Length: 530
Ligand SMILES: Cc1ncc(COP(=O)(O)O)c(C=O)c1O
Image (cartoon, rainbow, N blue to C red; front, top):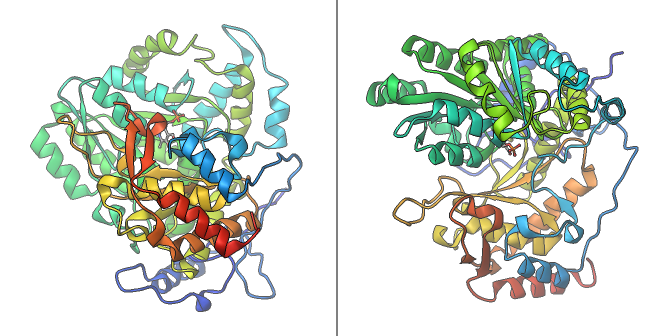
């Protein structure tokens, strides 16, 4: 049955026509040019998605699902939100869910599951070894990616552990478009280092590049010449590049990177955790793939890599992970580590029920209506914020809307964690929990000095099919209020700083009494409103 049907994406915005969006300031992306580019693509070839046009001309991200199960959420008064933030050490990871109104921390393990996923969970074959559930999952993955072997793992970072154990030697360098926190931690734990070779557009807040996650081919060639192929553990391409704003990687780039690596005898690894968003962008931003089946796009991508791995907390909207390869050598080396770190080869740390949900969730990734939902809601949130003058990463990517804390809190020095401060302030102002993606999420240099992040972002994740449009508008409204009152936001300093992945459970305090002042201003402006 044909269900899909969504407007061809616009770069801006859900709730207004483009003509109403003010022209961006100099140096920021020109949406108008970008819009024309996309419209040109659209005219060249009709997309598989039909249009749902609104009489008003508004570009509304229409949901192609209905809600059949709900969870109650609470919105605490601002004074209680301030208290919760203090208790959490100004770290949104340490907040209790019962104090959070809209949980935009991440999409990991919190995408809404479909009725078919829940139904599949009831049919799981519970056994330690040889479970039918595993063979169902293995078959779907082999078919989707066109790869020979599948090794299960309990989540994405567990795959990174196994891959690093096998491929990373002390002193080796892993090249990648951009690091992800857990990826880098596993590589450095094995004595390797990482080098980021993303294109310059990738780390610009505003750009008109449609695939900002692309590797810079000149940087790749230069790094291989300088480091030597034998000292490069692998080249890693991350789909939907997480830490630079959920930005996609183009097929052309993947093809070029793979050819160079194959010629130089360097292994290639694809992190497919954010593949769903990336697939959507390949389909709508690359004219060559508008008519290509999503499965064929996946198979083509996979054909360029020696190893594909993923977090199934993201890809497939369940919980778990896995590694795929067609190489006998790599398979046998990695296989030994699965029972050691994860569990037996037919579950790898996942519950059979989650494996069944994942099997169905992966198949649903082939549906454009499923994979478009997050990007079009991200686009809607970014569009609302741009209208209100709030600085966000553009073009909007997948995963979530990324606010530029460096511009937002330009008065807060980077050593006082502007993105962490903005993140805490947003929770106080709204009950919305987002995630810091800036200097706080970095590891210190070996000499103990701060490694200042290239981008200071807060990420408002938009998990699949979880939030409604009014919740998106509420979030934009509170962020706009915060932007108006941005001078009230001050810096943060650590009171407890873990050595590894400090952003997860580190505790901080405000540099002065700015958090109290912010809450007081909120009360003054909003009266008795929550
Ligand atoms: C791109 C990317 N790679 C790897 C991981 C790690 O996956 P997990 O959280 O399942 O360990 C994540 C998680 O957010 C991710 O976004």
